[in-house]
Image: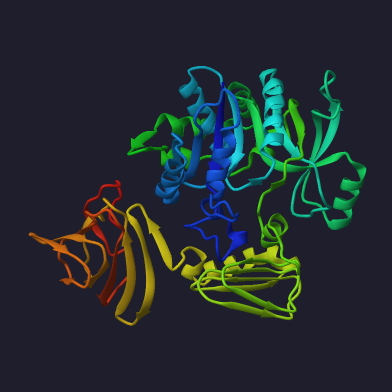
Length: 477
């Protein structure tokens, strides 16, 4: 029995300004099929035999988007919310404990990041099939990607003694050692030797094998994970871990905690069109290019421009005389970078955080379980938003201490609770919510409800919300 453990808790800051803390890359689509990276990860599993529904670990701030995207693929997953970020070793430990309960035994685990691209699903499935055989015998498997270039952004794995003497001597190896991200000359030497593979971050092992090795090599991680799992509670369709217990775990990757120390590590080479899509250059590599070597998305015009990654979400972007550049346009930020420096965008995100800028965390459009809102305009004492409510959804019953609100319906039908009144508004109708008035907005119709909200008051922050009732289990801001 195979249970996938999908790690979906990353923040994807290297793909800023598209990927942001509250809307990271695993929840976004970067390929023509329109599926997000999380959805592609789930769809990839459907080609595997004897596989159970996955266990997905994610940040609690992403829970409703994760659940909605899984529902769109028809996936009945167990979704576990990480109360704090503690890297992959404790996350996998919690996943192993959960999988053991789900299978009522000792299942094989396939650990997958949610934000990777794999274009050759058949090659991936063959590798997983071999991994099942080796993992069943007690090995901790890591999947190593056959290098296509001397890449300095990946860790490397040196192959040791071959493990497969029956079909293909190149199919599986003991791990001789792991190597950190190298400089260019070292990376070239690794590739030329044929002895090294890229470290993909994909693993396979029996639940008992991983938990016993974790207990031997990093018992404090297992103790924290077990304590957090023992204190778990159900919250709608989600499983919440014990925050205090999980917080005591060291923040460390599965590579450092277990794989680099265990004597049972093995590596299976994969040549499956893999990319971690960890940077804008990686996205340029992974996508189809026009006759000038450009990858373009959105409204783009070019003249004498070559080998660029150009992405527009809101406006026309015109590029003249550019070469090897990255230009990313969003509603509230524009990134311009040399393609060979685009991996350094994380430094910009750090500066945004240091300066308390919302652009590090939020887009102008913010997604909520009931729909979304988008900031249109703001100044001292007022703010204008476009609000979209999904059919059948409703906001919480709430009030604000510091602001009043004007609502104008522009599409659909709104059911509005205002104090002890209930109103039905349609297109071009409006209402006013005084400061301190209890209110709720619902969409009773079959099409999305769109309205314009004008807020006015001395403080307009999102934390000025007192919730009295909420369909999604959220508390007051």
